[in-house]
Every structure is written in structure tokens, then in C-alpha cells.
Length: 144
Image (tube, rainbow, N blue to C red):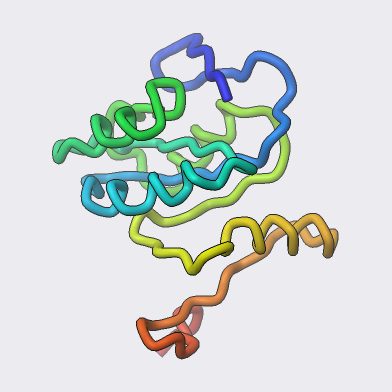
């Protein structure tokens, strides 16, 4: 994916997008990015785009070192999670996206399985299952 920036916050992609894009929002998540980004970079079926919300811990530098300059958008401050996602969406043409928190850890094949479920089912959204270290389902999408 090549993003040609036309201003400081938003870019456009030259030509149609051929791969799904994984979007990661970062705010002082360097350690998480050091673990997550190599795992995503190894999935050749997707591109990864990091939106950084003004980190001061070296998050931008680690993301650039793993993914390259064209895969990182510096928001210029802490816009919040939703605005950072919208900034990423404005930088890419329409198509499949995956949105992950920076602190996620994948089981082998998770991004590919999510993409397959999205394309095979015709669904508009696919949500992964959250499990703990022992593999037990963690009910994270409920109110206590």
C-alpha cells in the first residue's frame, strides 16, 4: 500500500486497493506495537496502517521501522480512538478493513480466519473471540 499524503493528517492511495487493511490506533503503545506489528506484517494478505494519536514513547518510530513511513499516519495529537479510525478510513479507498487494538495477541491464523469469515458470510462485520491464556472464552463484550 502506498499512501501519498496531501496534507498533514490525511492521505489517499494511488489506485484501487487490492488488499484488506488492518488499522491500529496507537497512543503510547510502543511495547504492544513491537509485538503486534511483526505478526501482522507476516500476513501477506493484508496491509497494515497505524494511526498514532500523539505518542511520546517511540510508538511512531517503532511502527515506521517495522512497516515503513507510508504505513503510519501521525494524527498530530490525541484525537481519540474513533476519530483516529476515521482518519485512517479517509486515507484508504473503500474495501475490507480489520480494526485491532494495539494490545491484541493473535492465535495463529486469526486475521486470515476473520477475512475468510467476512468474505464467505457476506456479513458487514466480524468480531474475533477473546480467550484468556488457557484458551477459555473471555466474556469481554458485556456489562458487569
